Each structure stands twice: as structure tokens, then as C-alpha cells.
Length: 440
Image (cartoon, rainbow, N blue to C red; front, top):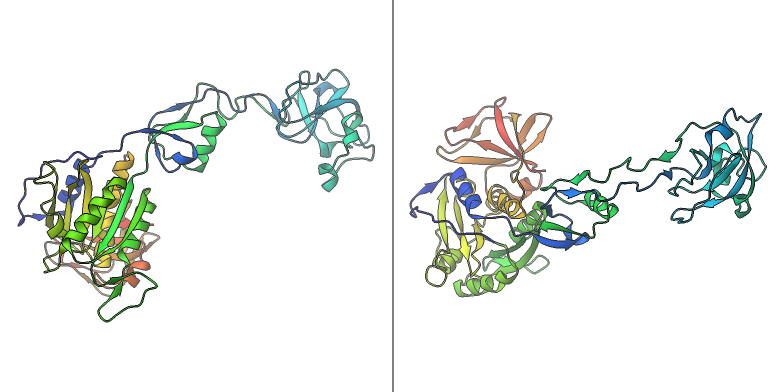
């Protein structure tokens, strides 16, 4: 959970983007570690270094279906003069009791089976007659040997060097090696390695639970019928998907009508499953900005140290923002604007880093690069505001997509980057090098 930090600023203070982000990251703290089963830990951040308790492979084993032999017994073997060896039996994967391969002998061996005592190499079945006495085994015959080939004689048509087709004990990792470092995000390959070294559980920081809700009596669920003046609720879907993309377990709450008491009750009901709350809409200066009405005083009387502060930021889009904590656990809450582009840009700049911080990651930000602006005309930007324009990035160049309007959802869908125009810049000429936030 978070630890609330004091904020000594008034309602008229114009916050910079950096100030607002620093305040969020100074308040949000990584979630406490827990022990999870491997599959439940997927997507989580490892808390401790993991040391290998047993070497991989744990024993010498065959990398091929074939015959385990002594090198001297197949030296000089060829199709004209094959080495004829006595087959003493089968060695299958998982075999506990192993045959001993003596002079002039061979053991039929399967991929992954332990190399039997006395054997020094494995000859692939394709280098032999498979014990069938019909010349070299090729194609499907190499994969459909008769059971009777496990004993009797086998003809070997090629020599083998020592350790040929043998996976050595510890050739992957050795006992005592560090398998994974603390801070590693556990994906399928890491889960596989943990299972391979015998770890059934692991200590991680859990994926944050993020609850997303949108506000507005004009919002209708997709697939519903639109009445005059209504629009479909896209923000809650966008932000829930973005939270999952950031690594969170995200829950979407249906749009809440413009009623402060209903909104407050809904948020309080959702706290039981939230490590972070995100709202969208209702943070501006309109008569129906219910988020401000519902939450501006929460915590002042009931939860000392809590409460939401609503701010104006020197940015476009996304000037109105809210941040603070709510409830007995001081659950952090970020209140975002309602315009779709403002909401999404605000998520990328502020909510995503908060989620990544809760996860315990060190690098919480999207990557940034310098790129050459390719545009048909100069880009304009309001003085004193840091502007974030949608764009597409490729090969060191970035091209604007759509206009500056904060309602342009279609343009946002085609963008994979944000073009950053600093506060002191009012125009950017084509060919200028700009900072770019990469979204994909």
C-alpha cells in the first residue's frame, strides 16, 4: 500500500508535469512481497536472487535417439566396414537402474535418458541399421524401430568422438549458480527455469490490483442504444486495457452517473479489491464535475492524512488532474480528465509509472528517444504548456497523427508515440529533432 505524503500547495498553483509525477512516485510504494505458486507468479517481480540447488541437466544424458557406445568400439566404422556391437538392452528416459556397456557392447538409448556406465558417446540411430540388419536407418524408419531391436546386434556405420551427442551434467546451469536476479519480471521462460530447478513457489511482489471507473450520465455501455446527447464509454475500456498492459490486474467498473454520493459509495465499495484507483472524468470546473465534489473532502475528517487534491497542470492535453489517497489503507487514487486523449496521455505519464512502482520495478517509464519531425507544416504549441501530440515513429523519424484535439480517438488508435513539445516552445518546424515517448 501507499504512505500518504504531505502536499503543501494551493488550488491556484500550476503544477508542472514533472512536479505532479514526482509527487505520485514519492507517495506510491511497492507492494509487500508474498509467496506464490509459479503460475500465479507470472508477470510479477522477483524479490530475491534465486540460486540453483541442482545442476541442469542433473546427469549426463543423450541428446539423440540412438546407441550408447564406447569410442574404441566404433573407431574406423564405415558403411563398408561397420562396427558390429552386442545390444545389451534399452535405456529409457527416467531409467533408474542403468545397464553397463562393456567392450563390444552398446545400449539402445532414448533422448533425455542417462548415459549408462561404461559408455562414452551416443551414435544417432541414423548412423546404424537400428538392429534390423537392413542397412542404415533413414527417414520414418529412424523413428519406428521394432521392439526386438533392443537386443541382439547393431551395425554402426560411422565413428563417434568422446562425448558426442551427450548433454553434460551442469552444461545449462550448475548447482550454486545464480539462476535469476531480484527484480526480474517472471515470464514463461523464467517460470520454466524455476520449475526445472525444482522451485514450486517463489517470493514476488504481486501484480497491483487496479480499479478503473468512468463518470458521466452521458455514457452508455458499448452495444447499448444511444439516446440523443449520449456517447459510448470508451475511456474505462482504454484505461483498463492500459493497466493490464502495464502489468496490473485491472477491474473495470461500469460508468457512474453524475451523482456525487453514488460515485463516493461506488469507490468505497471497490476499495476492497484495489491497490490503486483510477477515475476518468469529472475533474474540471464544470457544474457536474462530481469526482471533485465526491472526493475533495474524503479523508479530511475520517482518515487523517488522506484525501484527494485536484490540480491544474501546465500540459496539453490533461490540464485538470487529481491525486491523493482514500480509505483506511490510504489507497492511492488518480483522477484523470474525461476527454479520451487527455485520459490516455495522463495514464501513460502518471498512472503507468505508479503501477510499475507498485510492482517494485526500477525502470517505471516508457522509453524516450530523439527523432526528426516529419510534417507538412510547423507544429504549434501553447506557451507555458508541455504538449504531447500523437505520432508514429519509425527509423529515427516521427510523424504527427491527427490534430491537437483531446477528443480524437481515431488518431490515437493509429499512434505509437507521443511527440513532446516543451513549455518554452510555441512552434516546431519540420526537420527539427524532438523528444518522443514510445508507446509500443
